[in-house]
Every structure is written in C-alpha cells, then in structure tokens.
Length: 102
Image: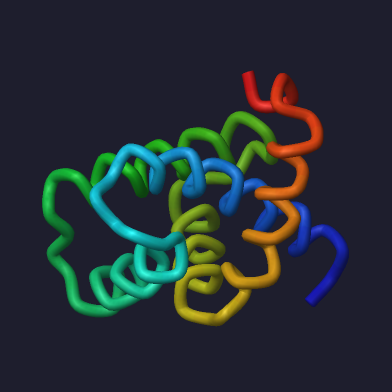
C-alpha cells in the first residue's frame, strides 16, 4: 500500500463517516462491515447505492478516477479493517478542526 492509496482511503473514510452519521447504525465499524457484505453480494439497496455513488463522485472530483477505479478502492477499503485505522484519524480531525469538513 502506497502513500497515495492511504490518501484515497482517507478520503473514502471522510465521506463515508459523514454518510454514517445520517444512518441508524450504532458504530462506524458496523456501518463498514455492512457495506462490505453488501458490496460482496450485490445488488445494493437504494441507500447503499446512493452512498457508494457519493463516494465515487468525491473520488472522481479529487483524484479524477473513473467509476471502475473508484469502486475498486471502495471495495478494498470496506473489505479490510482499514476503516478502524482511518476512523481514528477522521474522528480526531473533525474533533480538533470542526470547520475542516464544510
């Protein structure tokens, strides 16, 4: 995993963390595990599809990824326990710099 990959995963975590807060999940980890299972066994429901598309659009905007590349990174992020590591970074950044996510 390269530094660039870490930046992409951090972006996915930032977007998905904001999306998680709008759901009924108790923890971000549960949200990530549910997304992982949903991505492994399509089709996604409307909410999940909308959330994945929001992440795809953000990755396209920041990194100029096409949809296939974005989906590859999204699947890799949710399939592993990377969400645990990146969640800490995002949470602490949001707590320390609350206006950085506007």
